[in-house]
Length: 210
Length: 286
Image 1 (cartoon, one colour):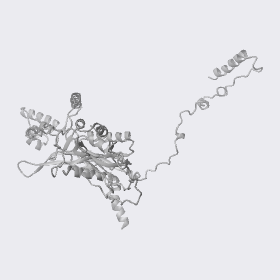
Image 2 (spheres, chains in turn orange, blue; image 1 turned 90 degrees about the vertical axis):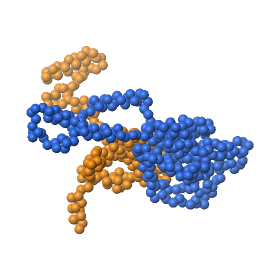
Image 3 (cartoon, chains in turn yellow, blue; image 1 turned 45 degrees about the vertical axis):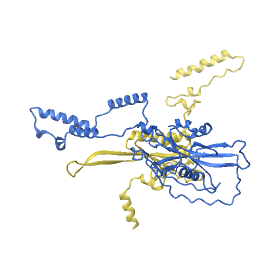
Image 4 (spheres, one colour; image 1 turned 60 degrees about the vertical axis):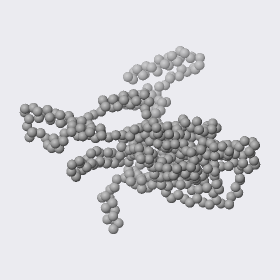
């Protein structure tokens, strides 16, 4: 391949000399150092002006590497002031999962539109209820149906008191059938209730403490 | 104004089946409501406006509104599509298995020992279960959704179960009796919300249990007295509206003033135009 490259500078210099003899006495040979000294292993793009055009990670702020052993911390709870409620939990529960999920999505979108900041939006574990009926003849109970209660929570970081009546009114007017709506403050206990209990760990801690 | 620390609300709204009261069930527990601080010795600028607070008491719909024709067609189409895309449920699989087993039993080469152990299913076939359910469904009588006689009775709180209703009271204002949202004059030392609560209790006297949605008013109406009646100290009245939701509709005592439960579309017949314009803005017709 080298011979092709070597030919090119020669022809270019010839052209240069033809085209502009008056401009420059000495015909400058157009150097293509990359091509002249090209060996098979080198990559030529590193010298191109567009090299590294797609880099973006260097623009991001430096993040400390996340340690896996960090226990999940609760987001800061906002306390109530004179003009705004603190962290509120809007809990939606019902038997029909599609309706419950759609309603919680509706609440989240409504908050985005009204400018209410949503801290978190999560689901609590499903609770199964067995409906047992008494048999017509006899005393035994038999399982009639299994009802599953689904719960979704939308956590609002703060709610303006002037906006509160309007917000609650819209929620109530758009509440679908079969869905229960509950608005209450967020507490530490609510956050801890989401975690699974670890009996072995608690047993070991109790043993250490004793 | 007197500053108060904010009461925290704990509200629970249920949309359950139509209870005896024909109303949505409610619970509200305001935890740790701070006692209102007494007014400090602050120079009060007496304004020429008399302040009043009114309550917009709403009874939320109890049953779903009927679907429009397009909605009905779409609903049917979606149900059909979901039915066609769905998989068979446990009950339907059991039906098929039982039918298959019956057909095999009728056949000559039937060996009951070869059957897998489905003791319960042989005694109580899935078809029998379906029959018992069918019987129970036929014996169930749902309450009628729309009762024409109740719908026409404007004073009944159980009318028009599919719409939200607003309470109107006929009150003496100045020289004439007008239909308006129940209101009461503000007195020294109480918040406007307490005035609204007082308005509800005193004007209706019917023992309505209401949950107020917040401390902030949702609307205001200004009324300037005619030039002849204006004095230095009273230019007019300002009425602040507070929203509340009806929790329990069982009236304890008979009301002493005339009360009406009206839909938003019927408000125009009873309210004055200027008043109606302001009230219209905050009553949601959802």
